[in-house]
Image (tube, rainbow, N blue to C red; front, top):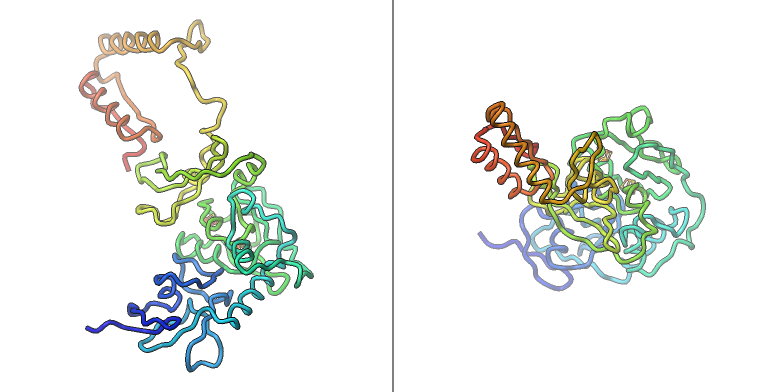
Length: 354
Ligand code: SF4
Ligand code: SF4
């Protein structure tokens, strides 16, 4: 079967059946700005930023909803298109109540402000009324600042299409437009599982990780280290964000082979323990009712003697080992080996058993 071909900015390029013009352009490294688009979601076509000119059409078309067709001739970068796009970005920016964006401050960038830099526009030209749509929400994880919302629906769509949670929806019209839960209650009282997906699709500072926002004052560059969530056996890919050697939060890896950008509430928000002052840094033995710091040699001798006496007095079935889900695979393997080969017990478990 012959390849399907179209013309993109003067180049003949191939495309697959059912691909959109935006997908073809992205695959060929062509810059087409987007805001309501997320590759994990169905095309929506609401922000109109991805407009392209198509030969034979009077008006520019949104490339995210336009299917590529054999012989189609598309232009993506004319002066007219760039003017339309930069005006759209200016209008979107003017919805922000100020220039302070929590996502830019705490994660280094957001899509709206990246586009504002690309098009070299500010928020002043269309400054006027703002929606004042934000409400107090006492949940501990998600900052919801809808004064910065640009009505792209990405949060609502990811909650529906990816999480299948349907916890939030768009309500109202015009200045009264906002994101709400059923009966307009708090997130904690809704169907929301606090997975955080809405935060990481939002292209603005309207949604953010409350804990990470709180770390904005920590100085230094943000370092991002790809890792694997240690909580259970699923093995979701995560990015650990740190500043000056201090962990400030977690973001999902969008191309993670297991989770494809999804995380549960523990994997997304459950990393306070890393910086906790209550973490054990040395062995402790209870002496006269008090937990007392001891050397590793003393701790190992004590533990070995107690294991031996328990097995001698009560038999191997008195021994039951539980490995932490935060332990590495090698550690979990060693624990079961020790339990079976040394203690002669088969009683071993781990919450990562999946
Ligand atoms: S945190 Fe997850 S479940 Fe809750 S509203 Fe956001 S996407 Fe939906
Ligand atoms: S909160 Fe963010 S993701 Fe949701 S509609 Fe507003 S801008 Fe879009």
